[in-house]
Each structure stands twice: as C-alpha cells, then as structure tokens.
Image (cartoon, helix red, strand yellow):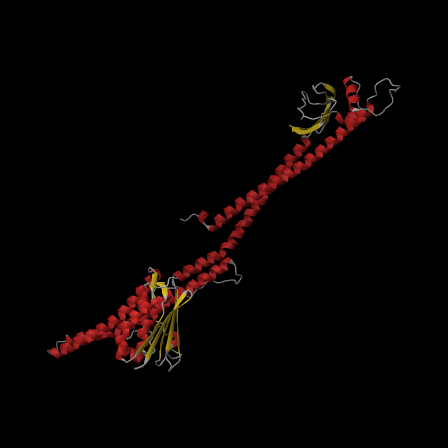
Length: 488
C-alpha cells in the first residue's frame, strides 16, 4: 500500500510547515529582541536620571573648604577635585528626598556606590548588594560602562580626579515581564503556525485538485475513452498550460489510433483480393470433379503468381513505411550530396520514362543536406516515379535541386493531367489514389507519397504539393542543410 506521505500534498505541506515555522520563529525572536531593547532603553534612561539626581544632590550638599572668607552655608561653584576631596574626608551627605530614592530592597530598587581608583568606598547606599565590586574601566580620563549582572543593571563612570561612581537598579520586574511576554509571544506564534498548517493543507488540496482531475481523465483515456479531454478554465495558469499540452497529445494519440485502424483496414482490404484469388484458384484446381490438363495447371499457377506478386508490391511498401515511422527519426545522419542521389535516381528511372517517351530535364546544383542517404534515395525514387506514372505519354518531367541559405530545396514538376482540387488535400495519405482505375491496373498501392512525407518529416523538412488540373503537378521538398558544400 502506497504511503500517503509520498503524495505531493504531503510534501508541499511539509515544506510549507518548515518555512512557516522558520518565519514564525524569526518573527518571535525579532519581536522579543525589539521589546527587550526598548525595555533596556527605558531602564538606562531611569539610571541616567537617578545618576543625575545623585550628582546634583552631592554638588549642592557638600560645603566648600574652610578659609578664604567662605562660610559653611555658602554654595559657590567647585571643581570635581574638590568633590573628591570632600568625599575622602567623609563630608558628603544626601538630602532626604534623594536618599529615599536609594533605599529599601523592594523589586526595582536603586543603589549607588562612589569609590576611588583603588576601589575604596567614599559613599555608598545602604541597600547596595553585598560584595559589590566595580568592574575595571577602559583607559582614559573619562569613561562609562553599561552592563547587566544577573538581575541588576548598572552604569559605571570614572573621572580624572580618580572618582568612580556606580549607579544600578534591580530589574527583576522587567525580566519577569519579559518572561511573560516571551511565553505569550511563543504561544501566539504556535497558534499562528498551527493555523498556517491548516490553511496550507487547505490551499495544497485546492492547488493539486486539478492534478487529480488530470490524473482521472488520463486514466479514463488509457482505459479506451479516447474522446475524453481535460477541462480547462482559460486562466492561462501552469496547470491550464499542462492541460492544453496533454489534450493536444491526446488528440494526436487519438488521431494515431484512428490512422492505425484505418491503416489496418486499408491493408486488409488491399490484401483481401489477392488472397481471395489464391484461395479460389487453388480450391478450384484441387477439386476432384475431373482431371486437369497441363494448360489449366499452368494457368492457375500463373494466376497465383500474379496475386503473390501483387501482395509483394503491397507488403514491401508497408514494411518500408513502418520502418520509416518507427526507426527513420532515429536513423544516423551524415552529410551527403543530395544532387548526386538525384542523378543516380534519374539514371535508374530513365528506362521507365523511355517506355512512355517522357523527357527528363534536370537542373541539379551542388546541394548538401544532413540525412540518411538510403532514405533520401527512396524519397527521390518515389517522387520521380510518381511524376512519370501520372504523366501523359510523350510529356516531360522537370527536376531542380538547389541550396538556399541553410536549406536544400528539391522541386519535381510534370506536365501531366494534374491533381483535382478534391484529391489534392489527400494525396499524402496512405492508400489514397486519385486515379483509382489506373492504380488498379498497374498495381499501384497508394503508399509512395505517404512514404515520401514520412521521410521528409523524419529529416526535419517539409513537403508540399501544388497542382492545376490540366497543367501538371509540382512537389516541393525543403530539407535542412549541414553547412558543408559537396564536391561538384
């Protein structure tokens, strides 16, 4: 039993699911990173505000150094070096409203630490994490460093007087919120992926439905319903194009089957008469009603020989036509001189034309073509023999062969009675004979032009016929050249 996972629908669904899963994962990851970056920017902004409040409070609440007539309640401008000196002496304090910002251990609490270059503490909030160590700073008089350690976000700064400040806060509320956001984002992505799988399964079913119709129709045609065809929507989609190609193929198959049936029927009809003659004559001569004379035996044998000769004239062209149809298209091709083949054919058919006093006129220019010399000789023989047989006694046959660019053209023209308008479209059909009375008299089977057309088509060329009653017929053959000019 064939596994359903081998079907196109399952394969399309699998690829669709993988691509959709990758897209959902990429979207969720990007959304999570963007949300975390926005959250981190808000946290850093809060740290910057806390750091600015801390610095401003220290500037306002550290008294100037005594001397120079200054008073303790004066707040003149001072330098960072003066701030470091006062912190080293332990004179720094924070106002209550600022100190409350750095108190407690509730989630989201803030803390700070002011230290010297050797990591000695100048001033530090009571809620600073135990064992707090300031990380090494990059080289330079002024530098800052933002980093995340566990559930804390910190900014570390250094100044030229040797002051190092750290302001941090607990970010566990934001991390918890991001964890919840991540789970909800993952659940939403999973829901979208499952819905996408269902939608993809439905779309894949709709997409391959025409393929199922094509398969059923092809199966019906294979069962013998040759008249059936695949219905098309006219939308010019890929499946519509495939349907039209298959319908064209089915048309050709049906035509081929009909031609095969007609071919068998015609061949049977042609063979039935000589076979009937053979049977009747042998039955008559073998009757025991009386003794037969030698003359009667000779007459029966002569009749049987004529019937066998007629069957041979039919069977040989049939075999030749079948061989050209089955093997002619794959026969080896080689450059050959078509004009030389025509000269040999004219020489062979010269006695046949002389019997009826028909003049053969040839204009054979050097012309090369790529083909099977034996098949091209049969083509030339059939066309010239047809022109001689259907010409009037004492008439003329004109043969011209020349090259035009990448093609070689053969023209055979006679001045006989010509071909009637009703017969012209059918002269290349098997067993078709325009002059049926004369064909029966000379044993002509009506296969010569059919063989000629098959040979021309096998060589990738074209053959046409033109005629006006009373003015003869003209056959034109065009074959592709091989680009090599033969020796004249």
